[in-house]
Length: 124
Image 1 (tube, rainbow, N blue to C red):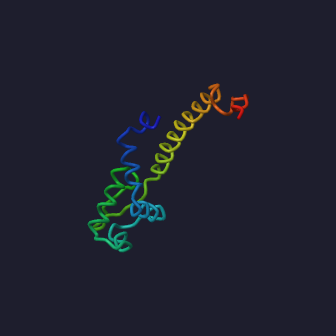
Image 2 (cartoon, rainbow, N blue to C red):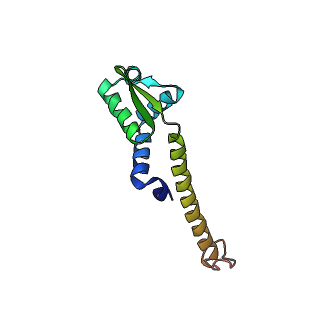
Image 3 (tube, rainbow, N blue to C red):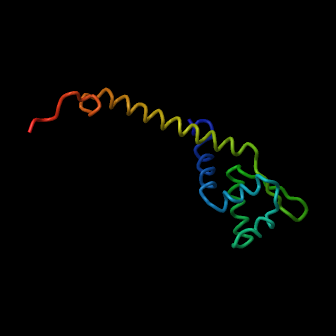
């Protein structure tokens, strides 16, 4: 399951980072190419420090890589990041599909369910 492969904390950081609209937008921008934090900050109605914090959350989640180039900090998407997110979601989907399938089998075997009830309802 997801926890075994990626670890609980890793998955939590990943989904926490992706839960925010601004961080998802920063990620989309960085997929198109490496950008400086100052360039990213120009695109948002918030302070430079706020954008830095968003980038730090993405970096802790492993979604972006930040490198210093002279006075600038350049941000780029980690190419494996989307794969990790997809793996986590695929494993969660698999677990839930298994649960739903087991519930469907239990309901199909239960003689009290409507699907298996072949008798007529009470006469009035």
